[in-house]
Amino acid sequence: MDTDSVAQDQLRAFVERIERMEEEKAAIAEDIKEIYAEAKGNGFDTKVLRQIIRIRKQDHNERMEQEAILELYLAALGMQAAPPER
Image 1: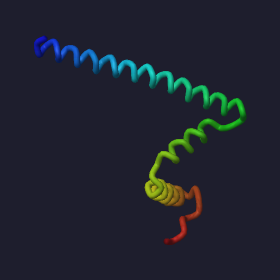
Image 2 (image 1 turned 180 degrees about the horizontal axis):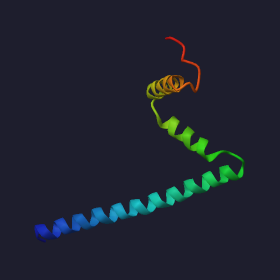
Image 3 (image 1 turned 180 degrees about the vertical axis):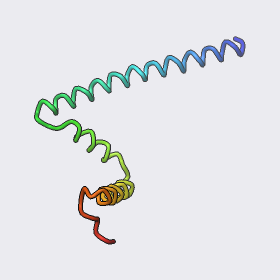
């Protein structure tokens, strides 16, 4: 077996593995979509659920920093009271 053949076999294997993972990813995405639909059917707000999922992925310190900046910006726009001095 020559080097070109080995490289072709490796390339084919990589492509096939990626294709399998893409299929699995699509199936998982469909499952997640169904869960959101079920939650919506039970009266839950899916936009808020998505926001909660996004927040839970964040590091605690990063989240606290973003929330502080959000409060500051909202206060600057007159949309809420100024944040307390720290």
